Image (cartoon, rainbow, N blue to C red; front, side, top):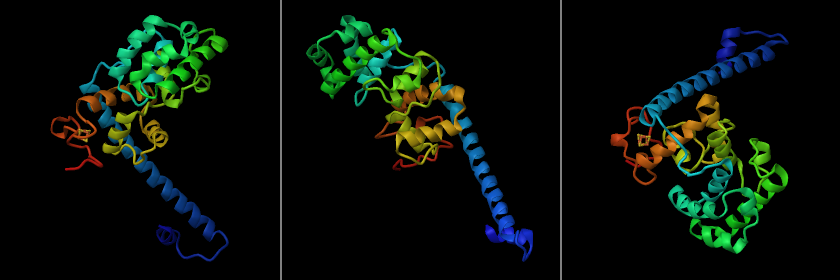
Length: 249
Ligand code: SF4
């Protein structure tokens, strides 16, 4: 590329030659980078159109009646299916419907109720500590702020994004769960496997207003069509343009 710049600039022997060559190189690199970003955005628009047509109405699969319940359900959903969490939270929220009640609950009683969600000792400790912090620092309410949410026990960026996006309608990021991670790789929307990097790639190409529902739609698609072991590409609406990266023939 440098020599194409050299030819463009012509043979020169002055002090500015290397500087001009560098600037030219930088400009070409920037132009190439912009072209890549534009084409990624075009692809993304195509994916969004299909997802919206296939899953026009989407909601969070975790049952909840308040921000507090969504927060606790999301903490429990780590390494567990939403269906299992919904079964467990029906019982949990009947006994402890809000932060004050959960904060006062005996740890052993919590462990017993949530046992089937896996990692139950750590999860019980976290939801009790989280509820206690909500009572002590936030008057029992869930704060609508990413910075405050991630200070709560058991709450990482993904959980905070779920609560802020789904309950408060605030797009602070893209929720990257196992379905979003797998499908965005298969569709070529990211080349990364690390959720933080995947989220960064998705945030760079998806319009901000789509951040919340994109994840909901992809999760639905992952459950219905683009399954982990055997994606049903023959009935997928994106089959014509999906590069199916990592999918075995
Ligand atoms: S074509 Fe196959 S791999 Fe691509 S999104 Fe559809 S089901 Fe998934």
